[in-house]
Length: 100
Image (cartoon, rainbow, N blue to C red; front, side):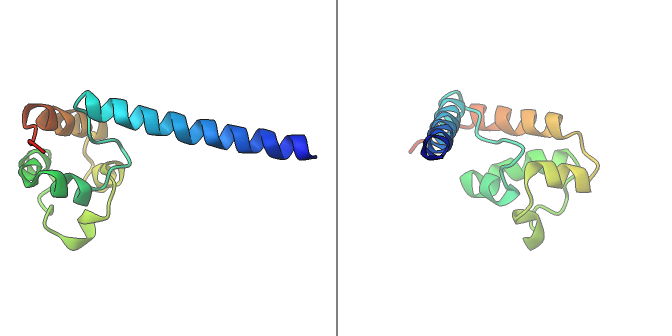
């Protein structure tokens, strides 16, 4: 029974480490947003991304409830192609890098 516990612990550790590594690689390559990134996080990173969202039909980017929605949820609510939205958002961040 202890072996199963240790195996579960190892699997969880590897999953968390791999997820963290993937996120660092994504940010290193300029891709900031995922389907699970909230609209609020996008706007906090760079308010200029609001224009990309508006261009895709999300005219309520200032609405408090939209800040808590993920990219996938917002796309579904507004009947927007989520993959196209995500691609354009990441393209925006790649071309508008903010200096730290």
